[in-house]
Amino acid sequence: MDHRICPLILSLTIILLITNDCHGRFYGRPFVDQDLESTNPIDMDDQLDAQGRLSSSSSSSGANELLYLTSKHAKENREWALQAQKHHFDQLLGQVSGVAATKDFLYIFHRGNITWDQSSFNDDNIYQHQDRPVNVDTIVAVDLENADVMFSWGKDRFYLPHGISVDPQGNLWLTDVALHQAFRYKNNNFEQADLVLGERFVPGSDSNHFCKPTDVAVASTGTVYISDGYCNSRIVVFTPNGHYVTEFANNDNLRTPHSLALLENEDLICVADRENDRIMCYSAGLTSSISSDVIRRPPGLLLFELEQSELRKVYAIAHFGDVILALNGGPQSTVGISIDLGTEQIVDVWSPQNGSFYDAHDLSLTPNGRTFFVCQLSSTSSSLNNNQSKILKFDLEDYPVFISE
Ligand code: ZN
Image 1 (cartoon, rainbow, N blue to C red):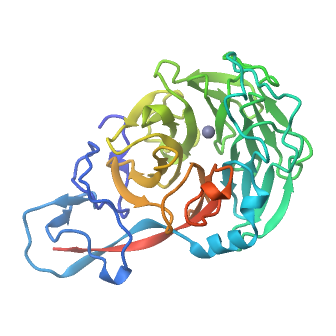
Image 2 (cartoon, rainbow, N blue to C red; image 1 turned 180 degrees about the horizontal axis):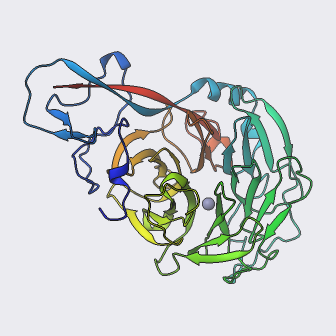
Image 3 (cartoon, helix red, strand yellow; image 1 turned 135 degrees about the horizontal axis):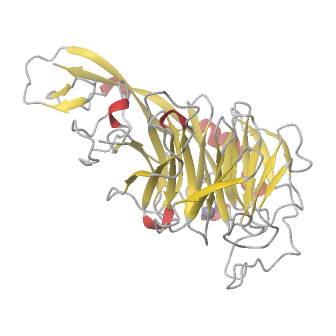
């Protein structure tokens, strides 16, 4: 298993598609939505191994329920959907490229009346509409529970919004693919970015330039990771003050690294390598914040990659514990999947209650890990399925699993 985290994890997380190894095999039994009362999806032959992980066994003696495991199943919150419809989100928002949840708000990053089309860039990746910033507030903060719009800002400042994330200090990070820049805004001052990385409208691949950067992840140490991007194939690392440290993945043939998930406890940074249908996980190099039994290592060592046959274009990833949530598929065929990194098994499959995702582009978990939000890029509400909103809320519900001996 060398670098992999398999031996470290899992205890009472689910494994429903199961063997007792860590080789990422999928047994075709996706975790489906069921009534809790009728839940007993595990074969009576399944047993626990020494790590508390389920394993296959020939024993089928007895049917006593000896152990109760808890899993997390993602289910769309329809009350939120109704509230969002009531607030006419679809009229308020243009193409929604990103969402970022805090304990107080959901931040939404959108493009107003601007869309990314074939006229947006020339062959040198120079944005062609530099006189046309988005002329409405591009960041909208809404209540996590009732979808009330709390406040908004960002008019005439961005051109093609893309990524949005919140760091452990509550600062907001944004990327704009037209500007080829990443921005940090202090959570108490949205008037002006306190840190700007990259040169305005100038694409490039050195330590001072990006080319359509997609996403930002920030560690509790302040270390910054930027996925770069639509026309570069790398992850760039900066100090908390914005000084270039290093970059990695340059030789891994990434095709649109589109989203990042930082698992600090495992010293991992995972990358949604969108056009290669895979998720790549590297060392984060956060030696000061990880447990002492993890070997000291620099950032950017490729530790493992997820490339199960079920993976399609991976638009966005996030994590709770050692489970990766991924928006997986093409623009019109996306489903959500949850992958346990310990076993590399798909442990849940999720989608909206009324149909499937359409142009699902980003997702973000609340800090307590009980809820996450998905945005759908769609320009118009008519392109969405079954009166969906551009923003969907999912709850991670406990899913009891009874194990028999
Ligand atoms: Zn994108």
